Image (cartoon, rainbow, N blue to C red; front, side, top):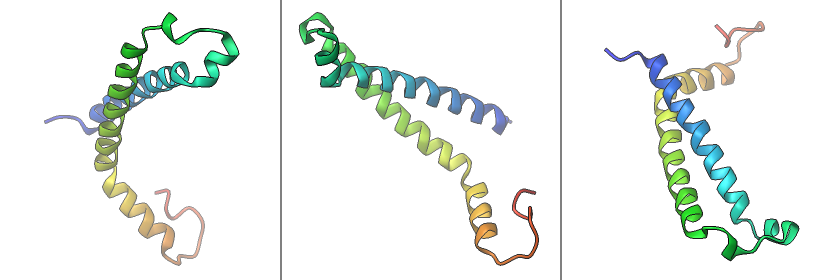
Length: 94
């Protein structure tokens, strides 16, 4: 049997990696960067940068969906708990 905590860990690691890749390539593709730095588009491998950006974004979407599926029961429980009118503090954190 696969440990859910281990799956969560690797999904989160994948999210961090794909986020960083998407963020860096997005900043490189940002037109303002070229104006600020004087770098020209032809100085960089823009096709490869765009491919990394697109694929890392797509993989990040898939990993977010897996993350939401893994945490679905927790989200339902927390939503119910937060919208119930209970007296006392800290009832939802248990």
